[in-house]
Image 1 (cartoon, rainbow, N blue to C red):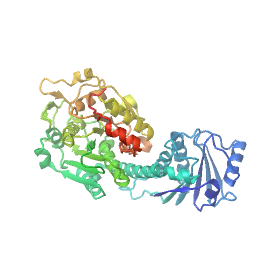
Image 2: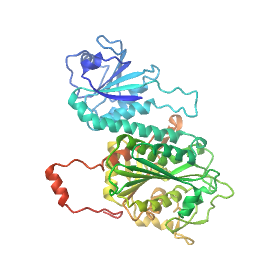
Image 3: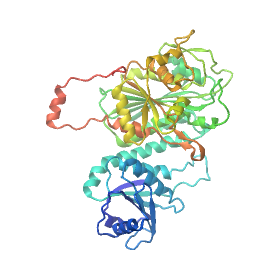
Image 4: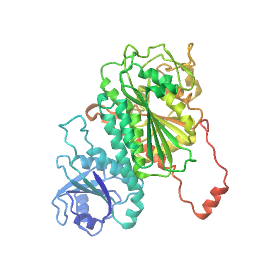
Length: 505
């Protein structure tokens, strides 16, 4: 669908030809002397439209309004979360109507309301069709976002561009997260990355088994050895700044199907292990958004991708493998494979001399137990990086929660037969997994996002969420250099360069 941003006061909105007009009304709404304001006033007086978020009133063929259907929708105090809730409910109510055009009028676009509204429209209209020919894709083609004044529209344009790019990135992440494992193999993910590599400022390199073995990625290769699908190591570059500018590296776990290996999972729910590559999907989606926005930053995406299968050649409990870093790993549980492929990617990331490295992985069921399906787990020894990611998550309505990384949690990873074991027992499992990864990320500021609870939904709403593309994109755009005034420029020139490290307090 195409999103447009227009200046529309309520009079202009009433005169616009559109199938459906949705008017978002906050508790602070101040009516003017126009038709739609009159409708809102009357609806409030009659008690048909209170200030509860997502409270709706549908009006058919309203006098003085071009749209065939008008939806008056309350947004409570007008917070971004309430706007998202209201828009999602309104658009969902139109599924039987199947409009081809929709206009969404907002009082203002500040405080991330525009992002919330745009993403809510896209999420509610998303229909998976890749392997379901009977599914009916949304017929909605045009969405106009209207703001009352020209100055509001002008000020909102950067946020609108960001929101549209985020919609595209989330859609890509959801699409590939949802595909069955036989329609989303490591080779297929590599082709998606190669297609992204044809976009402006994006470059892609795909390494196969021979190159991966040559690099010494013994931990990654060990996970892949039980599958007939060849592993792939995907390297994406977005170059929007000078070569001298250190990149941010995103590392996405790309297990396209996880049986658990020899430590095989229970059959119930195993179909959902196609979602074990949602970390990789989020990296692909973020690069889709970067290619649209063209920000002045450098970003590298690393995706180690393979299947975890129980073949006769598969990794066995008790095996010891040698990682790219030279550290040996005793594999006590082959179902803890995500960290085994990520650790080699984290070692590979060192060559880029990054400003920061963020890995994204559906890593542990323990994180779901801790945080449920609302917030992603965040781990980092860098307060600066952790706070920036937390703020980005809140802004994007894609929240995370920081968990501890005390050294005592690593005690359970000690091994009698290798430098480290790949699991440390049930207690604090999300933290011990993060402690394992931290061993391979000591040369740069690092953060780990455990998205096991947030990357997909189960039950009737089963499907990928596209998270944390919103969080990552907000964080990366926060790194874009801002224009400085003449006085600020002098200050920056003389200020000492600030350094950060993975152990910064």
